[in-house]
Amino acid sequence: MMKRTAAMLLMLCLLLTALSLPAYAEDAPVFNTAAELMDCIGGERAPALAEEIRFFYTEELDWVFSDPEPMEAVLYNAGILHWRQYQNAETREVRLTEIEYYPGFEIAQRRKAGEMHLLDEEQAALLAEAEKIVSGVMETAESEYEIARGLHDELVRRVTYESSEMYFGDSRDTAVGALMNGLAECDGYTDAYYLLCSIAGLQAGYQHGLSADGDGWIGHLWNVVCVDGLWYHTDVTWDDIGWDSYPGLCTYRYFMAGSAEMLENHGWDDALVNRPLAEENREDLFFYTRSGACFETLKDAASYIAAQKKGPEEQFVHVMVKGTQEGATLNDLLARSGMKGGWSVYSYPMGEDVCYDILIAG
View 1 (cartoon, helix red, strand yellow):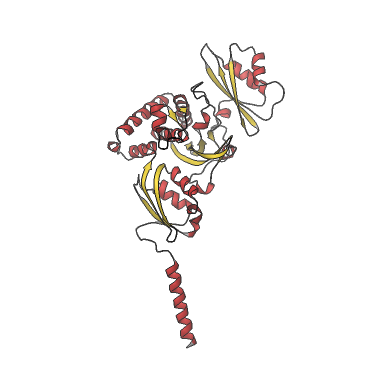
View 2: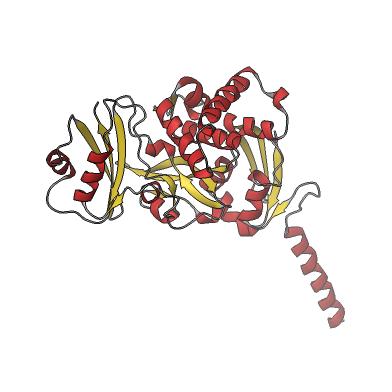
């Protein structure tokens, strides 16, 4: 009798356990890790430009869905601009509906899939403008690095930063604002650079995270780009320092930068990154070391800058100076060098080093 009772209790426990487990639908995937989730939504196995995505997740991913920010990062990184999310915490079912992709991302995917006929009039015009930009850069670029830099510089030259936070859904959030209207915020710069890189044959992606400004940390979007088989960060928004005053004036602090460099004032969740991002800057890919514009002293930097002045046109010169410098400023040293005409010096700390971007008047 006792054995029979024990057996019945065991069966009852197993039944209750089974009833307590979520019932996963056979037609929807189940994810155990963030990597699986990101591969489905934004990786090679992702449904191409899906209008709806449905899936389940296990308790290992409760941390992603207990707060909206991790899932937002996953979706932005997948090129998704707007969506509606339905979630059942008991069954751990998620449905994403009314999905709207960044136009740069959608155009790039349609182009790869040979679905150009599905582009609307605005998308077709945007693609034509982007292809014209890429064609101009490709005429002189001789390497992946030069292509990536040429697209970076052309985007800075064309676009003025303007926040659209008061106008949700404004074109400044997308490549349309950047390439067609010349106005964008971080989303627009990022979407445009992604589209340009895709047309040029470079692998690129979106990286959602935080950036530090004078008021603290705020949400931000930038690119990751693969050059010579290595993935690096590129933040064209933060490299655009000219705005209305000097269109085209840029820095290269955030071009092909390693993660260690970016973490000075950017932040992201490593668990939500599905690309092997390089940790350190590489000398042949980081602008200042590649171009021979990295110096141990301000005096050497001033001599280099003075030697770059050629002709009556305005020009930009970019240098990096290592470590803490004492004594005369760069302005003082340029004046002593005998360089003719006027100039403006913009400086930005880079850890213990300093980047200087100099506009030399004509």
